[in-house]
Image (cartoon, rainbow, N blue to C red; front, side, top):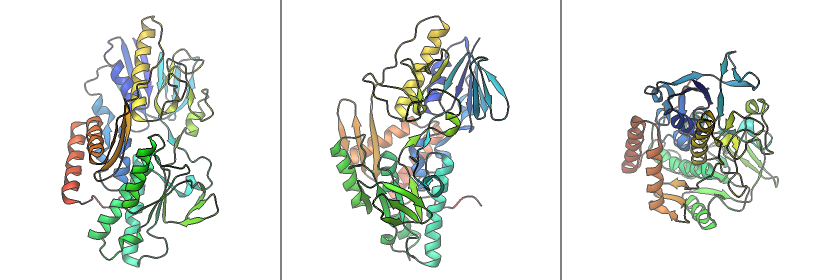
Length: 411
């Protein structure tokens, strides 16, 4: 029986697993450093207390209950031995494979900005989202006890892509509602949210008109949007800009981009200049005959030679394609080139406001785009319980115009 090892249980890894699970002559081992799959597009809502952590996390073993030839192993890859066809995990175990699919995803990219990794908060993992939430409510509690002083209620969000826009919009709504209901002694105007973007518009993956709409909506909700503003350094007291200006802040959230971790770089696979793993047209790693790389980790190109975006849909599509190529190779058939089908992209700004740019050039804004965004994310969530929980939370928040759970977790 052919052994296929999939490293990473994100969008791409699970897509590959589902596509391979139907083959009776393939045994699959899924390896991930967590025992749950995270729905990353909604992490910003965990960070702003819109959702519970369990709403965006789903146990991997629950997914495998009906998969007879799929096994799960929690672990972290640290070495690939192509001569032996094995991978080594950090705990010392070696796992053999006939075909290997790498789907570990990317991580936060700090672009070498001094202090960014040490003094800013990312929201790329569930732990990071919870850390942001704890920090935000700790700021509110401190101000409620000691008063608003200097910059202790100021938050800077670095990066005007979808994550940065969604985070800034959610923080703006949170400060308004939380300070009015739970912290009535605090002035909502004191809780500044500053969004910094190095380019001349937000949401550069969208059309200029949608960027303009997003910027106007954020400003109407109290977000200070600053374009053409690059961050030179981050310190415990805020962010220093390229022009020398310093924005004092109690919290800096980094959402400026994604990159490849040092652990993945240490595997010795060929990489492009941006760090992504170099792959061929069929999603196999350059120079390898049985190692595939998919999703955010892979430098997969579109038909015109441009790299496809590091989003959920490309990960799902490359995962399914890699699975088909594995099946083709096991049957002695040739592989084929991956073709990316752009289904569009969406970003929410806040209550009743979102932008969507769909395939065919259709553009949506406002309430219609917001409803479409809600529906898409509900449909793609893992697990019926998670879908019902998120739907209930969203419905309650919309009706009551409230937020929760506003608790500080941990020690």
